[in-house]
Length: 551
Image 1 (cartoon, one colour):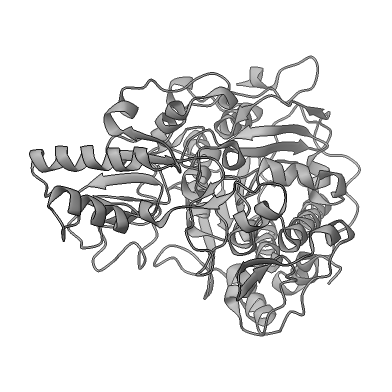
Image 2: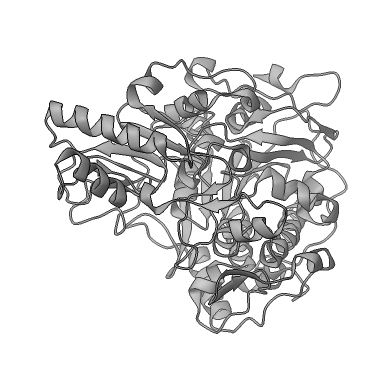
């Protein structure tokens, strides 16, 4: 499969769209507001991954490196997960302001038995759980760029398309015109939203594609050195995959470059079908490309699988941008990521990092409950709630004040004695810390924790593991690698802006993903009160001139 999957599918999914052709000879001058904003989030596309393959880019990623390049962007908060990361990109606000502190948190006062709250659900819907939920943007506390644009000009069209519901929802906000994400049933939206002809056509193309087996992708030359097996256990190896799948295997489709290609097909079709960027106002489409994350969890970030994925991503983005050029749209692109990612410790140990380890199962909430119950005489009760061996921990509401004090003291003693634990902050310690400021690369762990803190949603304790400790205790039962830590491997992401005619420059100093929204708002002359956001406008004009002066 040498050609772009997106290019092969576009004619099937949207017959009105011709094959890519050379870009138009002229477009509106870059000093004028663009007619379309294209905001792309590549899930788990770390700064390390971006830089590792940069010399090999020849398609869409190559184009973006010719614009304004910020290779040291930061998802500056501590909880480097998908939902909080996406919530920062188009709001200009950190999770402490968006309220999206993690992929899920616990609300022990909720009436339903399942106390976990998924970031993109409405838990007040009857009969739902955090695993069987009704998607909703109700937990996002601040407006997105698209929402602000619609307030300023109701004619603005706001569209969001992604491989995950939380990616689409967090970048769209509650007032978007169209929000679609991939599911086993095809691309779906909120409950009760009718399926328009374009989405139906793309879903038909998806079904046809899925109904055919995929023999796999060829190994690009730059990936040859990555192509060796790594044993997670005697029965499980990763590192040599090509994404071959049988007909009808949705899980393998989702965990392959095919997923992003189909998402870009729908995005290209939506731009054309809705005439985005063709009216007097500026429109915005956000695109969440999720395959890099699924692949990173399943195979790690440093094997042949991840290398193939980055190569295919470059190609598919190239086909997508060629399509926009053919339509003659004056568009600006920003590409970034919701978080980075950490490779599996088994491969790290083979590659000069023998200190890499998996987390001690004793740090899991279940194990903590058993150990603390035994120490306090409260065995058999749920004392501590949490969803993993790191992150927020919540003390049960049924504890008396005396019991709670004892449970907290014993929990802190046990956690702080564990050699894999870097620090444990209490709710009070984080709340008393001022909002962080200054270069994100120099923040303390407490400052990072404060950027992720919401007084109503955050836990009673925040457990942060040491660097080089993977928070998956057993890689044989599902994911082999992950993210979510407060360390730079998970915080650092690329931030790339491109528009035809803009002069290239590279700024190696640290900036934040919350800087993206005010930077785009300035390009279209949209005022955003600085007191309402955490980010700052980045000047995208090389040399003299200041794009931030247009606000």
